[in-house]
Image (cartoon, rainbow, N blue to C red; front, top):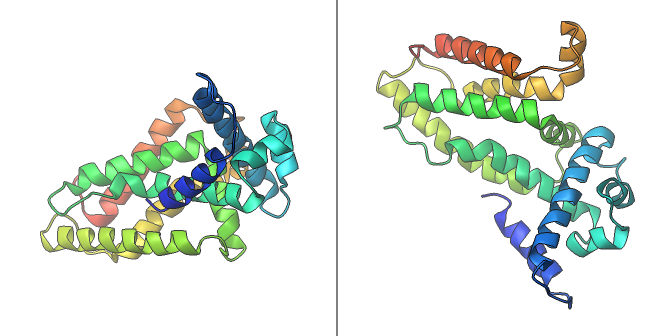
Length: 225
């Protein structure tokens, strides 16, 4: 996927240092990387790229700044890692789809996956949206990979249309519409909660909203619900 090569290079560089290896070394590394990424996800989503420092992330992760830099040499490396994770989260569910697949099953699964990510990890979508709003200078490689992914999905949608499995739509913008509605619950979380008078949205809300999105999308493109 888009971020795999970048991740392997960074991990190799981090692991090449001379450290004492014990039976717990692998577990500790995994736990520390996970703690750093979780802290970075929170800090970048709240403060944005420019407002976040590695010192802030290290403190939130409960680590010394030097420990953070062992795994991620600088802020850009850590930020790229999160952006790559986001791109993978969004593209994986449709990566191997073909025209032989049932569009109802494919789109229901994809919408459900995107909605759950917005519900459970809204910070991911906020980070990506924030980067896009500042012009996407660190998204060039992800945009290139997303273009390939979107070309593939659009070709599949055109085949579904030709086979009479769904009504005619413009494929690229059809996908953009799905992104817009599913990511709204993450990017505009504060607004959604305020306007609904809720302190949080639970699993029942997720099921209800997901079903409504699926129903509206299916009706709009002629897929039998």
